[in-house]
Amino acid sequence: MEAILPLSTAGRLPVPADKPFIPAVPRSDTAEQEEPGYPSLSPYQARPVSGSTIISHNYTPALPVLDADKLDQEELEARINKVIEDYKEKLQLRTDHHMGYPYNLDFDYGPLEGLQKYCINNLGDPFIESNYGVHSREFEIGVLQWFARLWEIELDDFWGYITNCGTEGNLHGILVGREVLPDGILYASRETHYSVFKAGRMYRMDAVKVGTLETGEVDYDELKQHLADNAARPAIINVNIGTTVKGAVDDLDRVLDILKETGYTEDRFYIHCDGALFGMMIPFVKRAPMVTFRKPIGSISVSGHKFVGSPVPCGVVMTRLRYIKGVSSDVEYLNSRDATIMGSRNGHAPIYMWYTFTRKGYEGLRKDVEKCLRNAHLLKAMLESAGVKTMLNELSSTVVFERPREEVFVRKWQLACEGDIAHVVVMPNITIRKLETFVQELVESRARVAVAEALKLAESARAANASDDE
Ligand SMILES: Cc1ncc(COP(=O)(O)O)c(C=O)c1O
Image 1 (tube, rainbow, N blue to C red):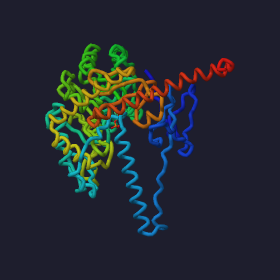
Image 2 (image 1 turned 120 degrees about the vertical axis):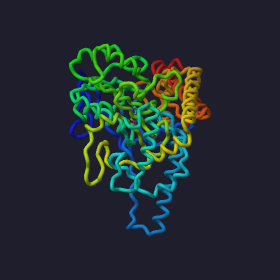
Image 3 (image 1 turned 180 degrees about the vertical axis):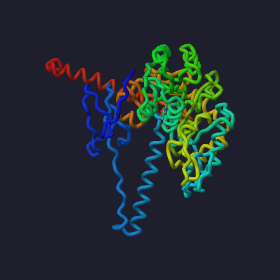
Image 4 (image 1 turned 45 degrees about the vertical axis):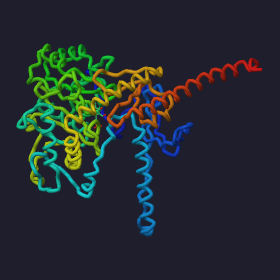
C-alpha cells in the first residue's frame, strides 16, 4: 500500500531527497523572456523546467492597496480607474490566448450584471432555508433537479449542493464514502486529480494509488489485484470521468464487474465519480458509457466553471439522500443543517448555471460538446500534419502533444505541462481561427528551437576546430 505523504508543518510538501530544491524566484529576479513576435508576459503560472518534473515557483507580484489617506479624492479615483482598466485589458489578452486549462471562456451573462450588488450566500443545506434571506436556494434546487434528471436519480432520492469547485465535490464525495464505510480503503489511479488523495490525507484514510494504462485509464488488472488482496476491508473507489492531463475515462462498468468478481457486494463498496470536466460532457457523447445513479455509485461531482462556463469557480456534487445523514448536523444559529464542506457558499454560482442550462437546453449543450470533439480532432490532425506527435483519447477533447520547448510559448498560451507532454483542452471558446493561430505559432516556435540547436552544433565544431572556418 503506497504511503501518502503528510504535509510538513511548514505547509510545504517535503522535497524528495534525490531532487535538488529549486528556490522560488522573487518576481523582480524573473527576467521576462522577450522573443520576436511575443508580447511581454509576466510569469503568472508555474514555470516548469523543461524535461524535468521539477517546478520553479514564481511569486505572485503584489498590487499594493492605494493609500487613500495620502491621495486627494480626484487622484484616487483616477488611479483606481487606471488600475481597473489596465486589468481588464490584461484579462482580455489572457482570455484570447488561453488553451491549456479546461475552462469554457465563451459566455455572456449580461442580463445578470445587476446581481453583483447583492451578497448572495447559500450558507447551510440547500434544501433548508437559513435565517439569512439573501440567498439563491430556489435556483440551486432547480439546478440540482436538472442534474438529477441528467444522472437519473429520483427527486426524492438525491441530495447535493453547488460547491465552490470540483475539488470541493471530491472532498465531499470521498467524505461521504468514508462515513458510509468508515473502515474503507480509498483506491484511485495514479493519474487522478490531486484533490482525491488530498481528501484521503485529510480524512486519514488508507489509500492505494493504482497504476494506469497508456491511455491514462486505471490499470484494471492492478485494481483487481489490490481489491483481492484487501478483500477483508470495504472499498471506496474514485472513478475518473476524464483525467486532468489525458482526459482518460475509467470504465465504470468494468470497475463494477471487477468488484463483483472479487466478491464485493454493494454494501461493501462506494464509488465516487470525479467528472470535473468530462462529467458534464459525457452525457452528450454518442456511444459513451452512461454515468448514472441507476448503477450502484455513491456520488458524482463536476466543476461548473469548466465546460459549463461560469465567471466564478463553482461545481456540483450529488449523492444519495440516505447517505447524507452521516455527515449532517443541525446548527441552531443558521436555523439550517450543516452537511457541506464549506460554510458560506457562493449564491451567484447557481444563478449562472440556471441561466446557462435554461438558455442552452440539453440540445445546446450537445452541440457544444460536438463542436469541442470536432475541433479536438481537427487540432490533432493539424498538429500531426505539422509533424507534432499527439494523443487524443476516444472520449475526450483533451489533445495531448509533445511539450513545446520554448517556455515563452508555453506561457503565452497558458499550457499545462507534465513531464514531456502538454495539452490543449478544447472547449467551446476554441474556434478554428484560434487553432490556426496556435498551430502556426507552435510550428514557428519549433522551427526556432530546431535552428538554434543546429547552429549550436556548428558553434561547438567551430570552437573545437577554429581553423576549419577559415
Ligand atoms: C479530473 C479533475 N478532478 C478535479 C479537478 C478539480 O477541479 P477544480 O479546479 O474545479 O477544483 C480537476 C481540475 O482540473 C480535474 O481535472
